Image (cartoon, rainbow, N blue to C red):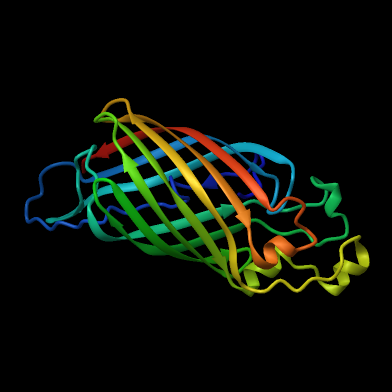
Amino acid sequence: MFRISLAALALTATAASAQIADTTTYSTQGQGPALGFTLRGGVKSAPEYFGASETGFGPTASVELNHFRLGGYTFGNPDPLYEPRGFGLIGSLRYIGERDDSDNPELAGLDDVDASLELGAGVRYATRNLEAFGKVRYGVIGHEGFVGELGADVIARPTDRLTLTLGPRALFGDSDYSSTYFGVTAAEAGNSSFTEFDAGGGLVSTGVELGAGYQINDNWGIDATVNYDRLRGDAADSPITVDDTAVSASIGVTRRFTLGF
């Protein structure tokens, strides 16, 4: 649910995250691969900006760390088909493209919003057929606000290599985040057709995500997601918001790399 341009690289995973394998094993043996990670590249459609009625298209990419060995210590699992279980830590990041009235004339008079990069971490609990997670991120570049994300998925496995997921999502943001994307200052109101609006923090959106992934072999895979989200609270009430519902979708190819050194 973020604006995409052809020049923008969206850093996302299945849930917009860069995931660290959540089971850590320690070994005194220095055998086997030293680094295993998965790269994903694809295309995504989403609203041009938060609250927009127009849809944009562009590239999306992600990286997932699966396994790492340094000296006699091993982190994660080198098995390319391994799926972690139980509680664990996950990393999280999200890229939000810039908002510019030169691309969206209806925003004339509003200040341009620079691109943002959010970094953070979270916790996850996973079983074979259920996963739940919570994440907190901070805008290290751009909006300089905090956001939180909650989600859960029911997992179905029709075959050994096909995985289907479905579950709810909720996004929270503090006042810095909300004012950046949904607020209208007095100066902006004087220069535009929008009324002044002070956007406070809280629940930003709720929605549901449907995902599918197919592992072609140990190295290659295909995955896709479809999200439906509805803006809530001040995000929905903002004069910037034309449509408080959003549908986004992505499809991509994954490639696992295993390196030894």
